[in-house]
Image 1 (spheres, rainbow, N blue to C red):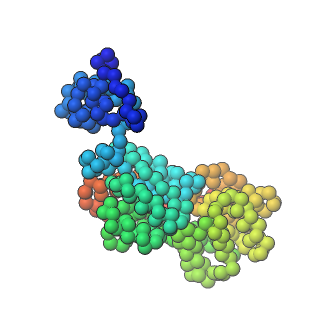
Image 2: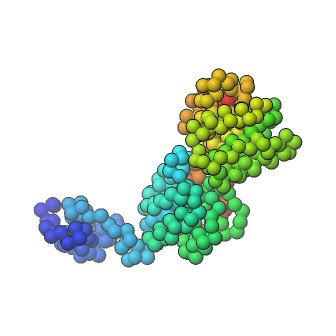
Image 3: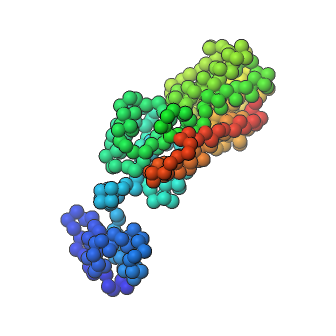
Length: 343
């Protein structure tokens, strides 16, 4: 079969085109296009000849040209805040699995929690004429909101839930999850509960609100127990925060950290400083990241369904791109309080 493949002189650009494959396989370009798309009407022998020609020449389809010709893009833009956070890695892997099964690829942008950078990325990526958008949360500048609305591209919001009209979202209530963790600490008899936070992105501030609400309702709220640092979250920062809180507020009997990175660092620092957890101070985190169950003591945290959110959001977007009716525009996948020995 390979002896039937004609030789092709490389173009000046060095890029092998669909026409080159057609010449090598001695068929028409439309036959190549249909064969590579897997259309059943093409004779199996021709399909095999086209496949061998494409493989021999190293042909890679041009998604932009394909989208222009078919008026249908095979790309989906996904905007996330950080790649260094395992939270978003889990989500992205689930999104990719779901999209690839349906024949779509991700165009990913990392916003670094910067509204202007998100706007720039979206303007840039919309030039690729994507079939759909997946964006994180609801907080963004007005220009970006306008871009999304005017693009005409289906959009699903990740990690948060909303009941607003014509807004599609998959997530859970960050505020409710933080409130439940705070109630747990109160039920354990803790009354001087500090809140340690970094990055201070919108979802962190929603958790802060849940902590405040519960302590205010229990009449033990103290604004001096809010420890808010805009620096990027890290284990090192969590350890430093534990030391500062203990020094400034020695009566604190629990610290609820906005994420597991900080809480894991605090547990390591407590061990180094000889602070007994949870007898002297309880420590809790958020997100149930890898390693939290292996800490000494194991970390009490809130398990968030990152992979499930990614899969469900991608599935919802596929339905929107196919013009299907969505029965529920907001999917709340909830969360789980995971009580371990640190509290």
